Image (cartoon, rainbow, N blue to C red; front, side, top):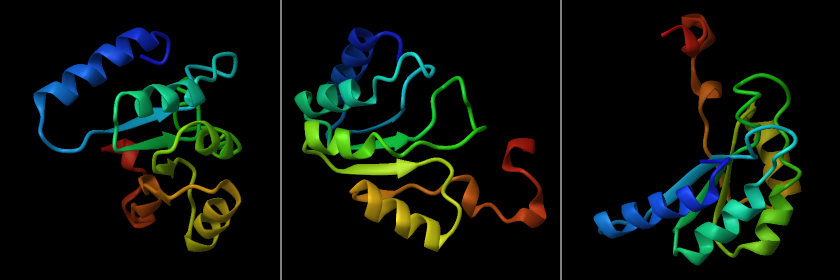
Length: 125
């Protein structure tokens, strides 16, 4: 849906009509480095009454590799007044605290960083 925002709109609208609980959206920066659309997604979500936006700070093409880029978080916060949670590449409490302070994000979602290294990679399961 990162390459088809009208379709994303239709899916969000359908979900909102189908449920009575608050709807949140998780997205990535964009499909690839040449199509960063996270700010457009944030504006779309706000216009549809989404309760919060979670942003994985990598593109879809990056998958889980490369550096996460939290730099667009301030732009997103400036163009959409909804809670923003960051995800992707978060390492430890010190790193998370730094990223939240620098980005202005409202919180974080922790994924792979919560996985015990003694179990190997969560991608192996």
